[in-house]
Image 1 (cartoon, rainbow, N blue to C red):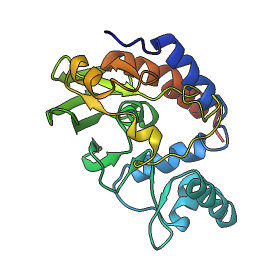
Image 2 (image 1 turned 90 degrees about the vertical axis):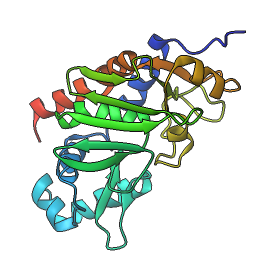
Image 3 (image 1 turned 45 degrees about the vertical axis):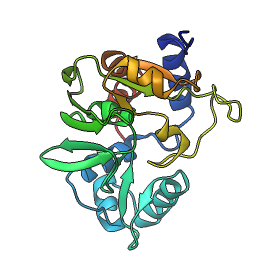
Length: 227
């Protein structure tokens, strides 16, 4: 029996509403911080001040907000991760010649749009162990191996314990990110998610379209608006 899962339109709408409610965290300052992190090194508060153009006291508040939201700071208080991360995960993300990681499968697909850079992605199917490889730019999916690969997508508001616009706990080990993985085929994904009907299954193109509408276009608007 085929499981009825959230439709692509419903999932896109739910994520768009979630991001609209994240203005405090998804802003131009964070975009610039992620661009700097994509160079492959931890970011000190002093360097963040230079990159973002904010005084140190505001950077301290920003880093605190990132930490509270589930972002990552190292033992010295340097910024090392928020969606894009220096800490190893199952989702490798090569950008600007630097080997990095992302928290979840959807993150790897949305990051090229936020960074305006090509990302080379490699992950594994948790069921079969097969390797899934993608190449994604801000404007298109360049390559998918195997061709039938899909990704599971957490749908905001579909978990009974959370409201659609609430801010969930995030991070590579969070429930949200553990819900979003790559699979070599829809058959493999359906097998893994048999008991999780509230998780959507998207083709890579569908996930890219979700990322473009929900993150790439807002990021580009933020860039045009400036500080």
